[in-house]
Image 1 (cartoon, rainbow, N blue to C red):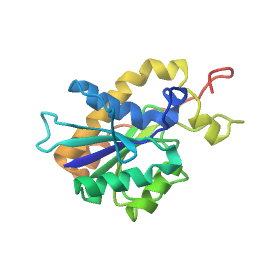
Image 2: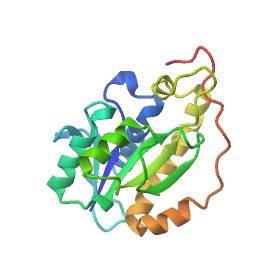
Image 3: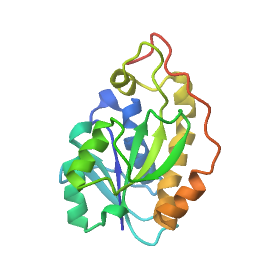
Length: 204
């Protein structure tokens, strides 16, 4: 069994923001099999699904505290479902990757990401798997926090469905092949071109 945690902030205000990429991917995984991640459990919205390519169930979760409080629901769910930390897959936005880039990582630091920081504290380290959803760096004059809490630009929105699908496929690949083989396959893909970031006057 794998516990797939999408990081994001609850509430309609944040639905289309860069910081909610993890929620979008988890929702897409559920939609593919006609499920919805809406059952309340241990501080998160949860559903358990099966996909044809994977023998065991995937438990999908969206912590419902704000981003910097994601760790306790994740730790509680890990304990409840008796999932090993190395079988926890966290999907999150990443400003260190250009928009359009999806990568797999095992372990490592939090890179200033408050959700990852809290997960590391509550899970007892960074031994979980990460599916990194590139959102690009903020343009000059933008604070990083403001940037990730801003909506995707109209140009990014046009590409978002295919990229969310790619990230969902990557989660399934990790569950099917294991993290090392998935990393070798996914991370060998050509890197995306750098994103230009939002244009002045777009939603924030």
